[in-house]
Image (tube, rainbow, N blue to C red):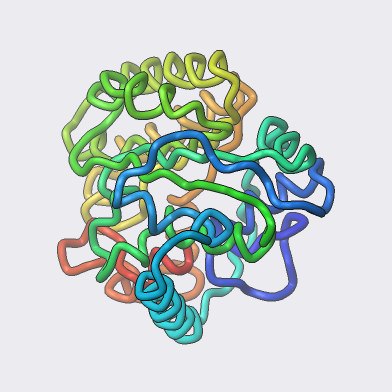
Length: 287
């Protein structure tokens, strides 16, 4: 999915980033001065996802490592012939809180919240997870901005477990936006889709009350998920209903990946690991 000002004519490497950029630039003005430093304390795993504007004081060796990683990422991007899906109509919303922060030259904190797809299982290096790729894309669009993307993914979890850590790992970070990837493990564990939907709706309400924009990410289209097709379809539908009811954005990962396989005729092993579930570097690069 290649979207900048909705569907761009040139395919880029990260669909999520371009979707967010489209929503952000609908309100934000061009950046003319560096922003203040982002306030949350960052763990070592978060550092890879902080834009270079926030890394000016890092040792030279670290800077060189970052440059090397960027080169590797670029190489992967060049090998990924991602094509924009046809007939997929995502809605990322207007992201007013993030756009307002950018327009006011203030720091932006984005929390990527979810399970193994957010944590990055299946990628060959932390730099190739979707939150780190997103941070890189946002820096290219807003080079003078301090935008921190914090990875709060934990493999195997779904809404019941995520709700238990929503306050400590998401709300306490004072995010301007939360990207919540949810639903896959509920399908795999045969959790009730309706109950999961209610938990997600409750969580979205808590995030909104904290003053953050929200974007939901639905399950992946992969052999393991497709084996529970009826449950997966219900989950995708319920998450879309939550997004509509709560007036938040949703990234239609299920339909994007289905397009890769069904319309573009890409075999699953192109974008899914050998376990038939998790995305690989190619998949995260096109995500």
